Amino acid sequence: HGKKMCKSKKNGVDPLDAISEYGTDALRLALLMGATPGSDNRYSSEKMEAKRNFINKLWNVSRFILMSVSQESLAFKADKTPILKTAADKWIVGELQSLIKNITERLENFEFSLAAEDLTDFTWNKLADWYLEVAKIEKDKDEILVYLLKNILILWHPFIPFVTETIWESFNEDFLMVSKWPVEKKEFQQNDE
Image (cartoon, rainbow, N blue to C red; front, side):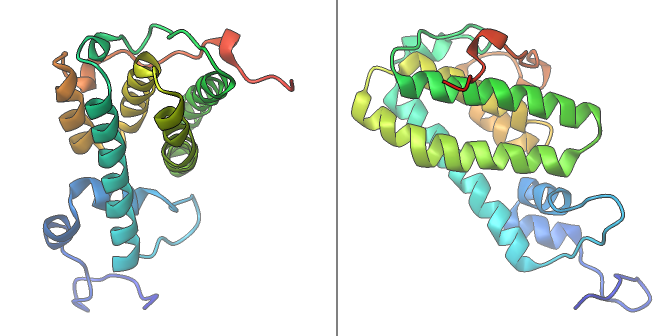
């Protein structure tokens, strides 16, 4: 209702109740996104549901990729660049390189909310809604899909560590939390053409 949470007013929200209803990662993401310096951050169940739904979307994207690629492709490294065959491949890898650059800069400048918003836009609008649909038609994109998934899991890990670590276990590699942070590859940046 726009009032400050206070123990004496007994209008606070127990984080353990929110975690049991929506999940830890959804709570973390809901409190982080939209929280900019100098502004009040409102808590709402709608915001928690939206973040839970996004995390579910990331889970489903990951599950689709893991189920549609070959076992050999799962070993493809996140820091190795796949072969780009189509304009869609070049576009999505260029978008990922821009994202890596933006997220790295935003984290270094403590702009966590903006970083999470950039990641959400890429994951939902570019990868899930656009590129995965292209991949269903064009086929033979195993290495690119694994490359994209591994890199977005690494980028998402500081924000939603539990679900990203669980998905990462599918690759049978070391822990995600100790994996190398992606570095922008300038040769794949988007150009005007």
